[in-house]
Length: 222
Figure (cartoon, helix red, strand yellow):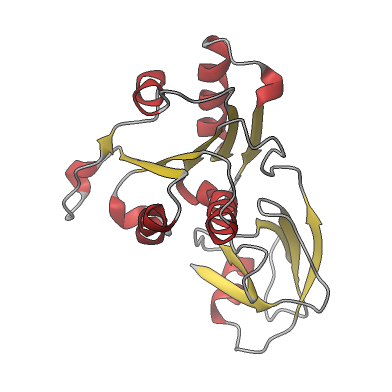
């Protein structure tokens, strides 16, 4: 689910950063508490602050899902350095698993709106198209921003009712090689569940990518 909040006057952030959201006097709480960190899924120039999360059966998520329009929350931030490199000559390679797409949605929308010169290649892994947040929007953005390429891959199409002609299986070195021809000094950005982030990091290191060229963010328990 995605949730949109009024942007406080003068509140700015860089695409890819996150915020801390605190529920104020929630009707229920549990041991996990009333505060969570969420990557900002909206682009800086969009009118609202959007977060998107997988829904679990926790007090925080139940309150978030059912709160009335106009309910006040506390926002702190922005924080985080998972942001686009200032060197536009280098190819930005995004590796997203599931809801880890949120920082990259912000970056891609921002890049498209401002026609940034960076070459952007987004690898987006999900079980099925039905599970892939923002998939149609991310596909459509390719038409308006020729420097951006989406490579979406599905790992459990046998469980899907939709037709799929794109990549299948998990992101691996062979898939990267097929789509990164001509990539200039690529910088890699990884976001997703901890296991996926660890696997992608190990794959890159094994293939001689320098650790300084890898930036990662884990989404635990979301």
